[in-house]
Image (cartoon, rainbow, N blue to C red):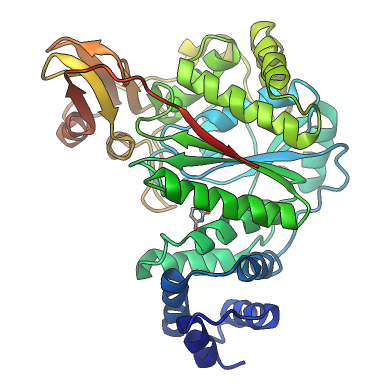
Length: 432
Ligand code: URA
Ligand code: CA
């Protein structure tokens, strides 16, 4: 294989063979192809796209570049859920216990977050004692006993994705549907899921800015999953404002607890029920969407979803008194009110800007070495469709600094207030 030939082939829109793609990925991971040639190849994909076959080959070449997590010892069909980059997205924390409370195995491998807030692991570690550095054997045992466990990244999964993603990040090649789809699906396949539910976010705060692009990405990912025998369903959901009210680590854990107790924000609850119902369908528990949704609503109402959360936190060493009394979570030193600068209706909350405000306060990281402050973040009191008076509080910053001008400015830039009320639409499409 000569890399220059492959670059030129791709540039001329001639499809590559499975062998060519395999060899390319292996050579790149082994440092046999320099970054400048790989960059040119990625740019050719960016402009020419890839056929379904090529995307399939690329995904499996990335899967085969590293270890696979073997979860075959877990009984039942394991469903994983993945969200394409939301802001204040607490769904994983809610969906795990909610779905597992019906006896469906949820085996979640999760990472530390880069960006607006921490990842699921960072959020769970806000609960004193909670451990995710468990062995794979312990993880499998916990899922078989409790239906639910979370483990930190183990093994050398998809090293090709790590290396290619880092290069895409600095060469303007992140926004490519074949590259995003193969990157996401390779990680889901390598981490052992039998079935996958994808939450594809659409809007200013997301990778996909409009519905057409999002549908294309969703179809591409569903196609990859189904071709390798992993039942895959994608939901398209709006990201024209953050999900729920809380953005920040402790704040989101508390929001997840309330949601599991059936008293969470309406949009977060709704999205969890829709994603959860599709997890039941992907698992084969039922094929009837409204029945699945009713089953899950009942688990929120009867306390079993919350009980499952308590059992899971306890099994991984966490102090469950925090779950029963959320006032035990440390609070930021200052609560700073953000007020509407005009009277009208909220018509948008730029999720990216709100996320940046939370990150500036210390809720997230720019590099993996940064320390997260679990107690800081943002709470939105008024969301799209709400009427507000000039001077009325619309959000609160939870900050450890009295002076938080930059974060305040971000919040004021994030909100738009108009004359007419608009009805927020959360679920935009389903692709299976
Ligand atoms: N998330 C991923 O994991 N990969 C991408 O390429 C984009 C988003
Ligand atoms: Ca939230």
